[in-house]
Length: 323
Image (cartoon, rainbow, N blue to C red; front, side, top):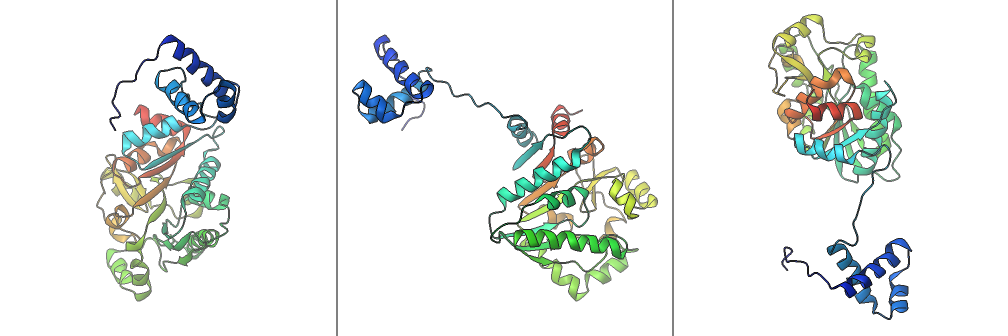
């Protein structure tokens, strides 16, 4: 069937009847069988006439966005940055974090439908907010929840990373897989030794199975949460990364303003998913917003570090305006 065929323009009498049928159905809410009975028409003809009323321009479909829904911006973000999906949330003043958490929780609730193997970054304020707001699924929708970055710093922080993985697994019905290692070690040699440990190698083997990665997007300047925890990137490391052009990170893999991986001595000390492994995950869900994250988020999109973005309204506008 040729979808480009010209629409036959009906005569005036036929137009009157089409308009009458269209008004009865769309304005008065009369069902098709009743229209057919009142006008002595077959129901099949009424159905055809309603379709024809659209074709000739008597009926126009207008989609009106409810307050707080920004599908137009989401579509623009997808087109501009080649994303699989985008979610734009409203935030009240400076309260970006709760809005991002709620938006991410709702998105995960709708899109985790069964058989997923989810990698979760161990230390992100936005991810903690999202998991805190997730409803418990009545049936398992995730097979495994895998920690993809070691817990950073001291034992208390590593426990927080473990709790985040455990809670997400509990809510989705998945089996938690923990990475029994710190996120950052003192030297590349220590990292190589730890990566060869059998318990760590077992976790590494699951990273190739990931269907989804749930990550935050960090800026070079540490977040307030990391600063409070005492686990921010050391100043010497920040200086090196800044000198190399780093603007942000995903899973402590730092990248420049074009989204290209910054190769540094810091990168060689991270115990976590590699850039290559992360970029191979089909769904890479980044949850991030707030004014200070602009350069990092834009670079993460340009580099393909995430292909699904959950962000706030102000950030969406800025990403599209390029400001």
